[in-house]
Length: 87
Image (cartoon, rainbow, N blue to C red; front, side, top):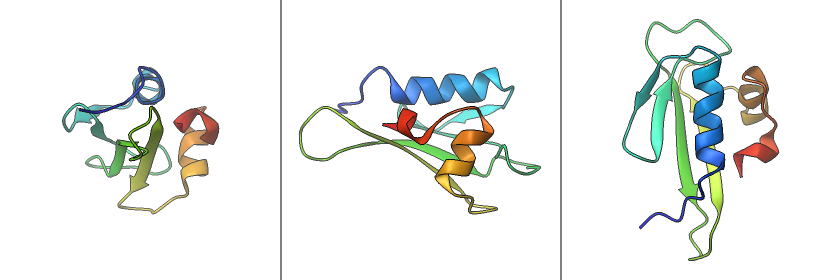
């Protein structure tokens, strides 16, 4: 049972969708998308919801580009988000 709030993950998903990125779902709590920081032939950016693990509400959206390894701040900014919006 995932304690994902109906906010952060959906907000990030919509930001990528609005920016015109093709999203490839990986279950209910993850997706792959082309990295907004470089040209991708296939999606290299993993976006995953991770609960905080303490049985409480909350968690964070994790982003990792397997191609360029960009910082989460740079990845968020590239789609018009602040790091605080990932929580």
